[in-house]
Image (cartoon, rainbow, N blue to C red; front, side, top):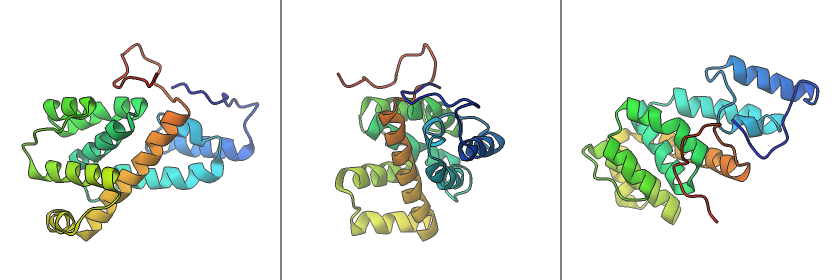
Length: 186
């Protein structure tokens, strides 16, 4: 991973930055992929953000397939290059159809075969576009997922929006020759 931030090395890191780095590297992620390359610069932000991220990624009641779909909806909305590059293969492995992934990347509305995926997509898009969801969509979501999982879905969308903004502002990129999934603004 690379970014526009100054590189932290053992000689330039504070004790708190080193502590956060060690915690991230010894946790379930085991690497600085994604926003952690930026967040390690601010240990006060990194600690709670990484805890929230670990919960959103590994411990919600949402199935991995739906969590990853929510992340791709977010990555596509923000055109977050690294977020997409990290989560697109996970989404595919978790069961999101290739045609859904392709449509999301191109900014098109996917043709969903599964109603739960269509609902996650609709919630994410509606929330990003209007900053609300209406009563009908809310009640459909509660009926499909239950209140606790809907709260968690909103948390996933919000957390990964923070991730996308971080990655975009600090131009965090995977060091790869693979073309970027989204055009860069000129």
